[in-house]
Image (cartoon, rainbow, N blue to C red):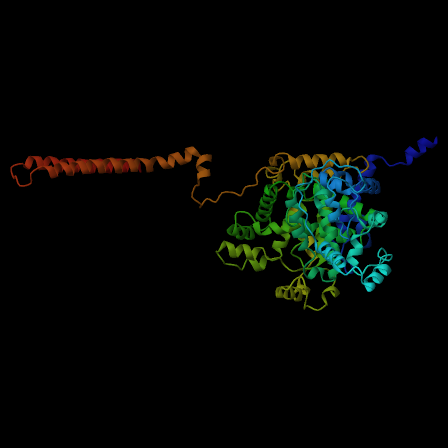
Length: 608
């Protein structure tokens, strides 16, 4: 046997590699459900490796992305900004006029009075007659000093001695430090060049594919991140540093993939990703930064893609899927939910943020995110149903008919705690300079009696096994480009043969394409008790025309017969009432009125 044949025999086949990958994923899924008595994540010290495997990130991908980051950093930063600079700025950089400590060019009256003659003696062809000389405080103070020296008596010996002693040293020291700063000759340009720093690129230059509006919205949401009892261990300085890292991670991901649309709550998910994959609050190394950016891209494009479209229609489709799941799992609770709204809108924050916004412990947030990574995007729908069913006994006691009150009751997040008891043994009183809400202290005091997160995840898996997506007829609500359907084929494939660049291109194409490729039926079902609207009239013209025909006939009958009655009464009023011999005329009028009334009854009765 040759060396090549032995190597080929020892190398695993693609089928074996796919089976190994699938078995490892199943192992990690089982590990997600196990209680964690001494750690916040289900994977313990190996959680970074486990998260990277669940996202399909290999060491080769990390090295390639590090090379990409290094090549981007090596590119000159001034290329993009040089084209945007005006001519006057470019000319000022090469000018021989000295600079002050703030980088402003200082032109004295002598330079400006020189007209078209430059400091180097060459003739300039600029027309500067329209420039207005503005004197600064320094220039006025220096002018006053010069005036005072010339007005003094020239024959004064004291003045002559002072001038003689001070003139040679004027270049070294000056009684006015500002004057010395303004009169630096060009021979010291080396120090000036060292003091002038290159301009810092703006956010628009760092993230060219984002608008200023998107950058401002991200900045507002990031400023509200890392707030609450879950982030109590972080100091104020650590929070500020983490917010800077989070902002860069979000903006970098959105700029690399312009098809992604930002939504409020996206920063909550990436904040947990940042804490899980970069535990150290210090600036991440190039390897850690590459891992963070790759994980954020994979998560955004392939796991929560349905939430990052141009609108929320795919999320509405998932809410409709949640409603079907509740009707199958617990019809009484589903009926209560239907009383509040046509769709379970109270669960929208849970679905968008993967429970990373409303829980009070970072460990619960990390367990929820890694559960969705292990079981796929559809697990978020089942997780929302399990959260609601945890409070079944409480919500079924509600007899409130007001939809707004029901919405508030259903949207109340149950108390989900970590699996270990000692983490909740700390004081319930909570003081945070960023948050001053008394209710947070009460919630934390009751957290020890909450449901363990492992119990919540077990209930979620039970729902997933009892009512899989095909039992909910998910293909009638969500389109073929939905992450619910693309995720299994993508993450169960052989990682060695999977082209992630092509997968990312397909994901961006789905985001930029028509929405009906992602969601088919996002709209809530019509309420039978509601009257038909104008939209219903356009959708069902025959049904509404049949309903309006009797109404139109009655209206015409009322108008026509009323006109005939008025005409008959007018004719009767024209006949002389005092003449008793005209009884025949009066009888004809009464006969006409009776006939009109009978015709009224026939027309109205037939219209009904």
